[in-house]
Length: 426
Image (cartoon, rainbow, N blue to C red):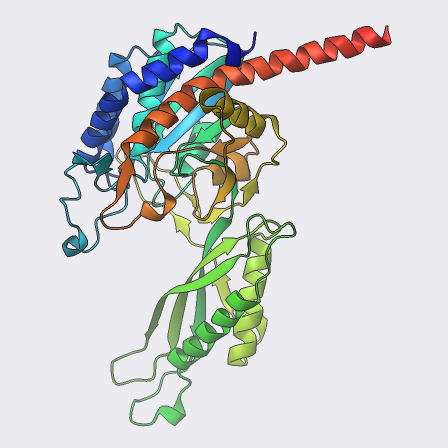
């Protein structure tokens, strides 16, 4: 039975439209609940209650603090994910409206997290409500995860779910902002610390010492050159990797002394084919050439994230987030495209993210096929005057509700084709 010719598509569209204003109101409420990374307790408890109010089959909070809700109990599974923490506001004077107002005006929801990415969470709630009202009991168990601490350490919440709580869906959809486009990849990233040593001397006689600050300056310029030299991936889908010196620190025994130690903090974005070993080796080589050091004397390490979240769990990881991409012909990408066409009789745009998402863990590390589809625009993330279109919330609610039906239909079609092939050989 084709979903494109049944009442399912029509019902999903009608319900998403009927709940459009309610979805916007939910997002407004979520924006009003401040939830910086590690401080998500209030928003998680509210989301837990909303899921219960909408009749989800199971709702729980995991050991790290994320809300995990379920609809259905099919033999296969798909998860829709939204992180519900946000970055901080930054300079309040740059905001035209209260960043926690959640104001709905002119077809937009305003405030910190409206795009990144409580809009995805609001659309997921409505999608779950739609599935419940349709009496969904299909082939897929559908999980909705409202996850924590992504802004500080993307993917750690899912590393915990997979490795500690054994939740490993067959497919996953990130609801990070994608302008309602299907995203099938993103660059990975890692953080590094490069440390340089000097020799201290009195500031009145700098020639007696070796200035670590000057070494750091030469190293920073060398890493600027490394950024220029990095190459794009072979098919130029994800583009080139990048490296940025994001912090510099140099110090010595006093303000009147030659500094004997310096640190450069590095943000490295990794394209397809690049990994931690390559990235560290590149930094060592470029810094050594710039400073005259032997490569073995250049210290480059990856920090570990160890911040405790709102449930005070002891959990952390290295700040390394692998690159991922899914082929355009993959069944999940194609199912997403079919769902889009079935709903709106139009071709979706299939693209990629510039920034990083929780899929670095699920898809980059654990190889679970994933795509992205979310309300709002990527350029709103971390920006002042953040907004999301109300229209996007309706679109995404319908897409999330539709995808499990289309995936099941695709599986049934594949099984029928296999059966026909077997019959042809008998």
